[in-house]
Amino acid sequence: MIAELALQDLEPGSLARLFGAGHAAVLVRCPEVIAELWHGLFEQSAEQMPWEASLVDIARNYHGSGDITASLGDLFYFQPGRHGYIARKMALSRDGGTDHVTARPAYFVQGNRRYATQQAVLDQCWAVGSRLMAALAPPGTPPLDFRIVVQRLKYQESMGDFDRLGALARNSLGRWGRAGCALDERRWEAAGMLSGRGASDLYGIMACVPGVGRIVAAINRWLLRGDRRHDLAPGQRLIEGAHVDYRYFSALCGQRHHMLTQIFMNGQWVDLPIDRRTLAVFPGSMASHAYGVPQVLHRVLHVERADASAPGNPRTDNVTLLIGSA
Image (cartoon, rainbow, N blue to C red; front, side):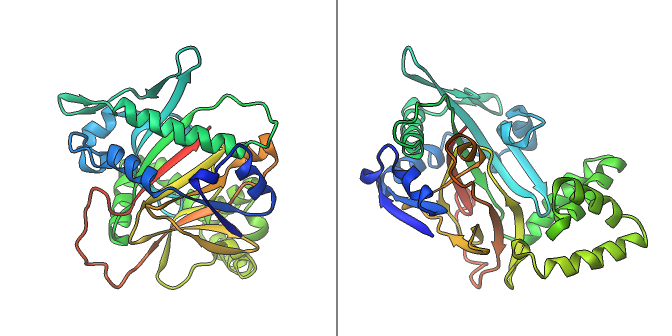
């Protein structure tokens, strides 16, 4: 089930009650707030978005980590079936003594210039995220330390561009790195009892072995028949495989033509409305551990459309704004 409520009804504990009642996601209606965030985060002509930038500028703005969820700044991930976006990610924190919101990274390099997000925009992102965090916590629960994450994610208009970017990323690796990519692609295909952490690793290795690979692939195809998590409709391609976000919550809005986010509910995939009128909110693993609310499995698909050649705005088409807490 997907619930819906207006922003003025978002009170401390309100999301906790809805998630506890069995709703997998909640649509928070707030078109005016989203319009302001969109203007501050996407429509500032002085800001160069990473999908408009040179590769050198992306590298200069990359604040990486071995953990994909902890990387900040500008980055791109193109691993077929697992990740497929160019992104700008910030983490916001607040000094309890001054209530001043600060961003990490504090600025982004644009050639020989720097761009810093306006303080009013950072404050508004914090206000929205902290309000959602208060609504996620059950009534009477002591507040937790948290950061607000702000992510701007760009997906490609055509599947061919996804494939080209994936090939470009693989080509930058050495021989063993490319072999690891091939193993990962097989591992992510594992279904049923083969999809667990250790079993999927073993399946990935065996699937790459000549001769043996055909046998284990046949077993996996048989298991796929009973694993609804791998279901795809005609015209759909998997961009981000089924996963749970490692944060308290994710709140999504955006402008999409070819992209689709789905959540797994009652044994089937359900489309999650992503637009510029509502924030689609669902809990992650940190909320499950802290508050006992069920974490939500979700995925991202590319969908072929009849109007694929229609002109658009490359800066904002197929872009998602994510506000979360971690």
